[in-house]
Length: 263
Image 1 (cartoon, rainbow, N blue to C red):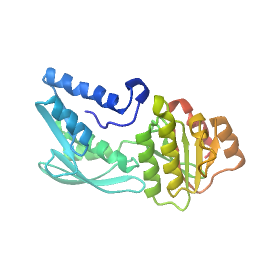
Image 2: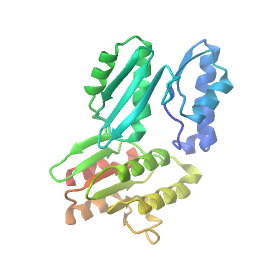
Image 3: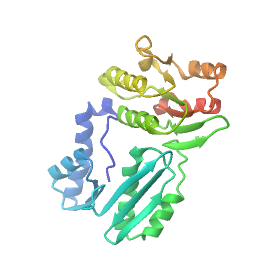
Image 4: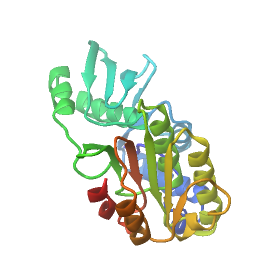
């Protein structure tokens, strides 16, 4: 199962095409070892890679009924509710995850469970009883705010999805606190500028950008810029955020978890 092909680890793979090539090698290995793959039919990159590999055994999932497992998102504000179907029927389910971008990940998990003959009730129960504790799309209510803790890691693809999700959610006041994205190599400057531009354009009331890469654009975008998390921490201590829906996201090396007690 490959869930996605995104703008991650660009430095190590030599760019996005290198990321695609590296992941395609997994499909080639499956072909040579008579394995099978679970593939998201909504993802054009995965479809292309699997077709090139000419896999013999494929189980598809996605939003269309033709798939072994299909699904329809009802809403994700703030947590995901959806419908899904297999060959036997249609079902409704809930998950303790936020973010429309997680819907296809949930379908992937359902597809695997269905393949290994878990019942729909077992699948739905598993989803309902999973509570993220790894700071990935983790919704946390503090004394002052509701925080989307997504600071385990970040890349341009996941950052874009998280910022767009924040804009789509209901909230009287919204805050985005985002940190530098690492391992982008020569594309680091351009990708940080694109993310900063998106964040500034989206309907976010308070925008805080942290890290040396984002700091390069402090004179271009309307936001609070800090070169280090320590500087941002001092700002939050002096200017506490209250009654806000907060996105806290950055690469692991930024250690943005140190800001959570201030929110």
